[in-house]
Length: 192
Image 1 (cartoon, rainbow, N blue to C red):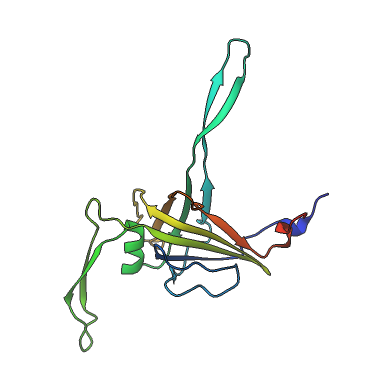
Image 2 (cartoon, rainbow, N blue to C red):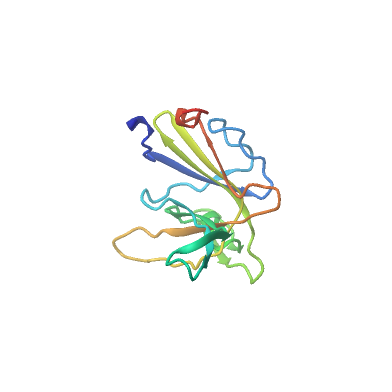
C-alpha cells in the first residue's frame, strides 16, 4: 500500500567536513561532535549522492541474454556546490593548499593573502556528513573517508554567484563501511 509520508524532500541540508578519524555523531539528532565544520551556504539544487557499482557479465552461446552477472567493484560520490568563497572552502575543494599572509591586517587594511594549491601527492582525505532535514525526519549520510579528486571548474560570470564545486569520492577500507545513513525516519523501523 502506498504511503505519501514516505516521500522525502530535502527541505534543509548542511554539509560538514572533518579530519580523518574525528569522532562521528552517534545518531541523526545529536550535535555534531568537536572537529566537524559546516561548509556554510550551498546551492540548493546541487547536492547529490551517487552509489555506482560496476558489474561484469558472462554470456553463453545458449542464450541471447547474459547468463551470469557479478559485481566487480563499487564507487560512490557526494557532490555539492559551495556558495561561500573562502580559504577554508577553497582548501576543501582542492583537497588542501597553503595560505600565506602577505600583509597582516592593520588599521583599516584587511590584509593581503596568497593561497596556493597542494602539490601532487599533497591532497588530504577528510570525513564528511551530508545532513538532510524534512520536517521532523532527519538523515545523516556519514562518510568516514573521502577525497576531492575531480577537476575544479569555476564559472566567473558577471550575473551569477561564483560557486566552488565540492566533489568527494568515497574511499573504502578493510572492515569499515564506506558510508552509512543515520535517521529517525519511522519508515526505517524493522517491519515497516
